[in-house]
Length: 262
Image 1 (tube, rainbow, N blue to C red):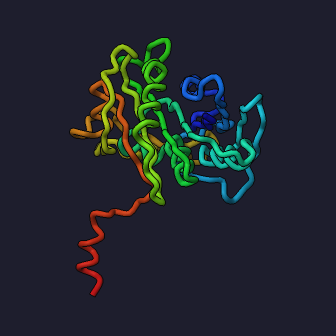
Image 2: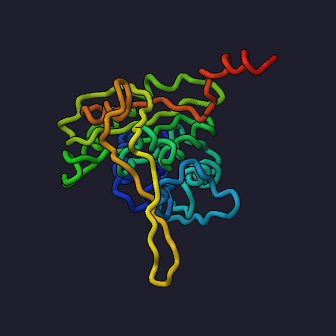
Image 3: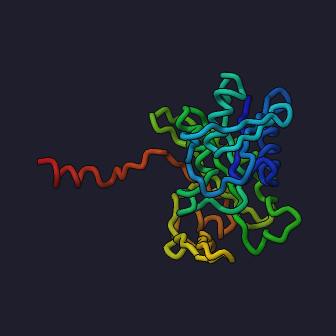
């Protein structure tokens, strides 16, 4: 198996090393793991691509590249340049430092990399490590992801990729904020919503009088209801959420047609 790996925390992020190990386990001794990751942190860029300017691509070692671009840029570079037209069998994005559950999904570059792979018709999984009091101070806060990641990916490869629709399904995996021994299992979930976790800005004036703004977030450990990603994670389960890039609100189509198409 040939696996393309990317992330949004950057080429030197510890979570990328965890994902490389997971990918190596999945690929096996006869497989290949290719890394194309952002040269600098790209958290919060979503599915952005560098459409209006070129992206510098640097080879750092065998099958290892850094791009001055977004995770989606990295996936495009991997497919069409780095891997020389021989498409990967699987694209993995992560392991993100912090959760990409609930509303975070909409902002995440980790999700954006997996989404681009799905739009290219490839099986894709985004993986993130939820942080919390039980794991943030561990020697390895990615312990849960490292211990259970390969089995989680294998389960999805076996059961999750029969989809052939135009907007192909890809998967959002969040490992719970617990030590490896505390992971209770897998839960298939829907995307939750934390009503108190909207992003905002905090202004700050520089010594020269210019106004700058810092983007601020909200609480991350608020449960989001039964069957949702955040609740499963807080309860110690790895959440698996199937996603599509199709943003259509399908539940509203028939009602709108009845009212508007006369």
